Image (cartoon, rainbow, N blue to C red; front, side, top):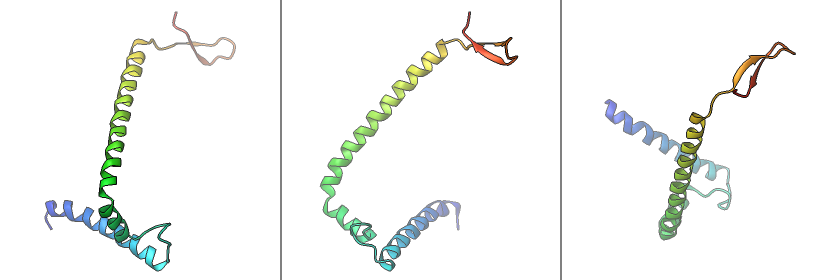
Length: 105
C-alpha cells in the first residue's frame, strides 16, 4: 500500500470501526434511543433537521471566533505586562538561610 493511500485509508478504517462499535453496542445491549441512538438514526435526524443545524452551527462558529479573539487579546496584554515587569531579586534570608524573593530596589 502506498504512503498516500495509507494516510487516507487508516483514518477511514478507524472511523468505520468506531461507527460499527457504536451501532453494535446500541443493538446488542438494547440501549434506549433516548440514551444513545444508532448512527443511522443520528444521520437521519441530521438530514431532516439540516436547517436548524446550519443556523445553530453558525452561532457556535461565531462564539468560537469571539472566544479566540478574546483569548488572543488577553495573551497580548499579559505578555506585554510580563515583558515590562522586572523579575524579583533574590537574596539569602538571614533568619532561615533560604533563598527568598524580595521586591526590586
